[in-house]
Length: 214
Image (cartoon, rainbow, N blue to C red; front, top):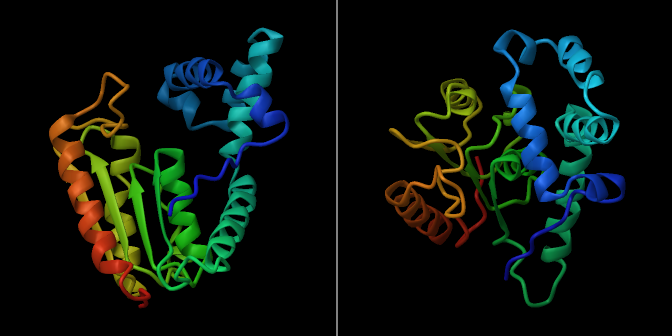
């Protein structure tokens, strides 16, 4: 059984259409690195955009806010609890997988849900060490070698996992970019995607047979 929750509701859902997301992220990623590292500078650039575009950019910034991430994580724990409450679901065998933003959310769920049995991250943001310390299930991370914004944080995530006795296994695919698993995007990498999916199936085959614990 699989359940795919929609975390973007209300005004965020109305604003963040696929086309708007593509345009908005294209603008944000086009900013110089020194601007991307300065929230005030980003805000000034957003203020220069047309009114309709500003609303989309503000919504994109909102969903990247740590406080919003915490709300999303709580929602996901509710989703997992909902699955565990079903008569046709073994409550000890609920796992998570996510891609890009969803990969980061999968990681946050592992840090907030002590009952989660296994977690897969596809090129998602790494949680802080403080949160990693709360994880109780094995975690598999799959990353593109050319996706430096994400992949360069993996060594620190590995260190934090070791420090807190969390089982974390990471695989970085040389030459692969962000979203290498998405076969509708130009950065799709068939070889990396196929190997990654094989690893996911093996990981879930092992990790969901029993509750994963530190």
